[in-house]
Image 1 (cartoon, helix red, strand yellow):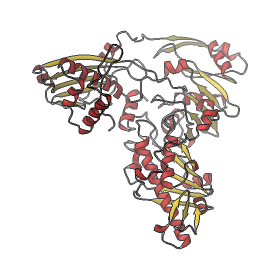
Image 2 (cartoon, rainbow, N blue to C red):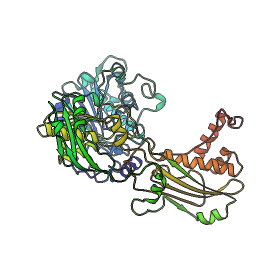
Image 3 (cartoon, rainbow, N blue to C red):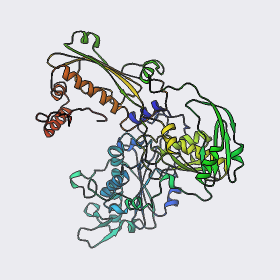
Image 4 (cartoon, rainbow, N blue to C red):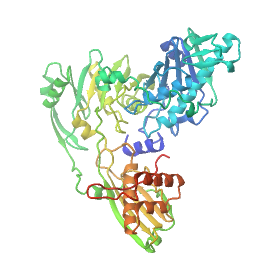
Length: 580
């Protein structure tokens, strides 16, 4: 998956641009098999009729979604609750916040919730964990599911006691009569029963003012496991008879292999060399032996000329990817407005490539069993990686399982499944589970980067500070938050895709960081050119009441009028909007 596709995926929540993938959508156990795995209890399914229930598949393009459920809830016979979601924990603590949301609506203790996350055999399909979408979309979805489950449990108790359900109370994992004379735990209500209930509609959610569990500080779910080292990150996974794999990397980008001599490595005890076209890997019984064997492989590469930092931004501007599309925003005539402007300013702004540098590099363990591939890997898109594996090995969905243990960060840098595919290729060749953990050098060289970019801005204003013209061109960095929040009668705003010399992809905030930086820097420069206070200049050109109020409140709290920059301390201002 390339950067353009990742940018579209994360900004528009759209899978149209994802790497080509089969149309197979049976991504989890069916209901009978699901109940066999989980045992007796209550399983609640929601008919996806509300906009919330479509979060996982909004804009899913050609990907066929499950048409009968949008979330899973299972209550064990002992009252323990399992909640299933395709979202994954990468350090943002949603395992805790989502459990709080469900506990609040289901009326159970927080510690009775177990979140099952990112296991493609068990959870509904989900496009991925990105774009700050979990809290505003998945949390309400799971809350809706929990309310439906609670209402069903109350109804079950009412039927057992032959009483009015509206008079019963659900709290602390049990249903009781108002006087407390009768009470049943959720486990007692569901014991020995494998019930499936499809619930339609949008049951009322608990108002935030009445929350007792959600929205309050609680210890991190599984926090003790992280502190004591009990938690297994993807790079900690161990399987029986597991071997360790490393991959031969080229000497430069887009290099082609000229010659290869693996004889020295093949003579080492316990070492297997795997060749598959241009792919060469080494497998051994321990990481040191694998790296030692790889060092013994002699390879010669034809490396094309590499673009360096010198001249990078000229390269980005002069190497478009395809034909330039329509402007993102075109209003009025920028040329005429600039010609008549009292204040004119033209500048260039640049942003460099940035590595994600996650605490845990890419890692995967692959295991084949009777034709089924299971991979434990760190990824923000388990189903996306599953699709990559399906494509690489020509497998149907039911023959590929991706499990994402809570991993050591991603920052948008782990949408793709490089290590998973490498481990799977090596495992298939040697017939044993294989672990691949990228070195820090591999992570900094071969993972995709935050895109570099050149941004050119021309702007014009009247003497009183009113903006009259805004021309903005972003080369390569990306279109996220490319628009201006300021009122300008004449605008020309355009993003220009270019042929990046490096792999590039999603990064926290996408191109919003670059576009905010460039726009707000230019707004400051325009304010100085017009002889105006930078905040007063901004406020004059904002009609958005919410943004205007935020900027004014920030200035007041900061003491903008009285605090000025000194040689020891600088004061600046910036504002903008992104994703609402």
